[in-house]
Length: 201
Image (cartoon, helix red, strand yellow):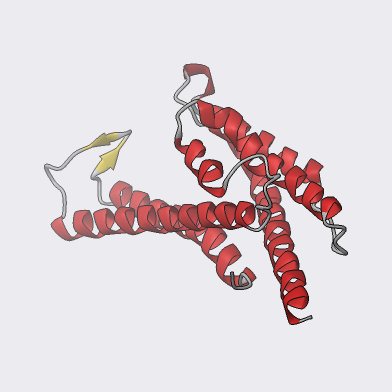
């Protein structure tokens, strides 16, 4: 396995999400300014064809950017579990990623996938007596909790609609997401470097 490029992984994950949101906002502004979207109602009777086409393209590009960012996130999770497979890991890379796609079960599995990875990674270091920095398990747990909060607050529950708690949970989530992803990349690269040193000897 090659060393992971921090610029590529972090840039793709964060850039994909932020870029996608920006494209959605631009499309929404175009639809509102042109009168196509008013008060959550779409009216095509006086719609300008080019404005509608550009808005749809922006929405499609925004969706593609977000999906790209998410796919890189799943690839990072897969690679993270791959690097610690020594017969003692609590799950496989395929399960770690695959079980996240199971509706409702994913609320539990995200803890196994991310917090579980940090715990297994640290145990892997201890088992093999490796001279490298451990992952901060509390940080990974906080990431999972904030992920769950974001997911619940985003659900179409009547009393949560228009609730600013979504934004309050979203800001710390984004910060912890970046720090957690950064630590994961550093951890993977650290083990790869140690493996390379062992091979060279």
